[in-house]
Image (cartoon, rainbow, N blue to C red; front, top):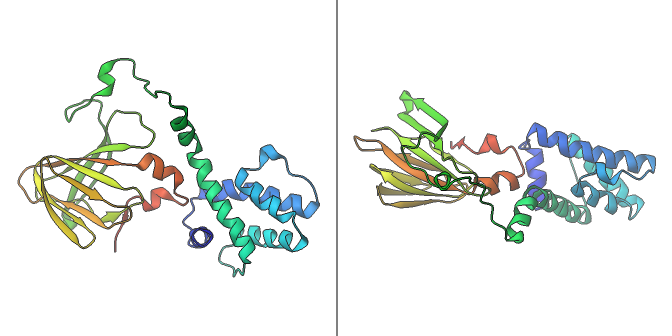
Length: 253
């Protein structure tokens, strides 16, 4: 896990907001270690606290942590971290992910209903629902791409169902993303490409889209191809350490 975090930082896949958030907490640790002061616990995120506690073990560990913090500011520089520090970085990375999804895990364990609907109709929707919200549209005639994505009017923490409509004879772009998805085909027919696999689909069929696979949906009929894409975006979007919006619809090459 430590190598994954280092690779994520080095390849600059961390969003500017996240870089600033983590960097600010690491800077507090750095100042405390260099000035021999105790950082304010309320100003340090738990992940950085792990590094601070490790740095108190010895002068060598202190220097290692300071080297790591300097590397985070300038990840292009070479690093030769010890196995002990890499172990702490693994915990740092794990705690960072846990902090992101901790509120979801807590609500799961509380065993309390999350229903916030004021009336029964708020728990049902349809293809003709006027409260469906358009999220994304892409039309590139040269690439035979023409499709839209709409969000269902449900408030959920983990699942993120979306209605995808591909125009006759068109497709969506070949892409990949961190969340896994199940497609439920509601109208029309076509085919789904998943890495090296290709399957014909029609209304009433389901298709699995694993995490990070290259995939594309093609409408080879003369009517709209409509499907419900149910993904775990609410969980993946929080736990993924990096610039999720940059990778969520990353076109394959």
